[in-house]
Length: 248
Length: 44
Length: 64
Image (cartoon, rainbow over all chains, first blue to last red; front, side, top):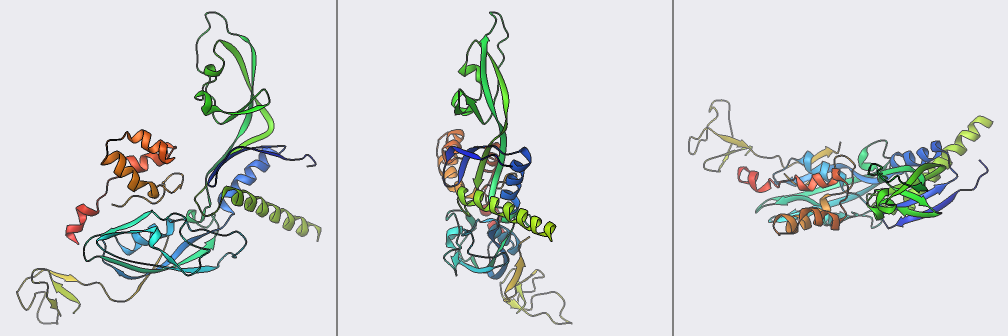
């Protein structure tokens, strides 16, 4: 592929973004999507040592909840299999939140502070120590950094004329982002129905070849930028590995 | 030490001959206390 | 029992919105639809997580 890629953001926030990529094949777009889901490693609690748990939930249930709490994962600082120790100690009457988790390494800490872990009544207590391990999404869903990652074809809208006088008034539902007169428009701006944007007009919608609109969200382990670049790096790494293996 | 009577809340040690019964109040419902060991759980 | 930490379907962290959702839409008199939109819980898979949840800690705690 000698064509240049072109990336344009429609929406860009820390944990959620939408962007258009031009000049990539459907296979490559899917490769990026899969890499974002399964190949970018994040830290997640893997073993819990329960010292005291007099709460209403079982140790296993609490451990599962701790495992699902996203932990910040600096890219390129750790290697797969690295461990960080965390601990939690809360006495009732109180609610144990993800923010009560104490970390031994400030680089790895809960991404959100207000996820309730367990509500503790009088005389109930939760004390536990946990090992967070860095692993990939393909090993366990708790290690997935990307959430609801997907893409659609970019579609171009063309007005071809007026509708007939007694034409059926059918909605023309579109989702995602369209290109209209060279401009990128999110379909939410016209309530996903093209007839709102062009009342009484005959319109045609076509897929634009090799242009994709990605929607990416992260669980808070890292920013969208870090996720996308790490996913592409992992694809690049594997491609290089294959190239070298074939040449030998 | 390993059991607790559910009525009088006292610690009860069971022996071979006494049967399942609290020696203090005669109640037959005993609760097993949680071990003080640290329990290691894998997160599935 | 306790709110699920993540959405069962898509995996986004919904637990962090529970306390605000409960205070505003369950105990308060705001419209749950508006509250969820404001919290950024857009997909219906994540919405059902909060809408259909019921805290049961108070119900089971008397039995230790």
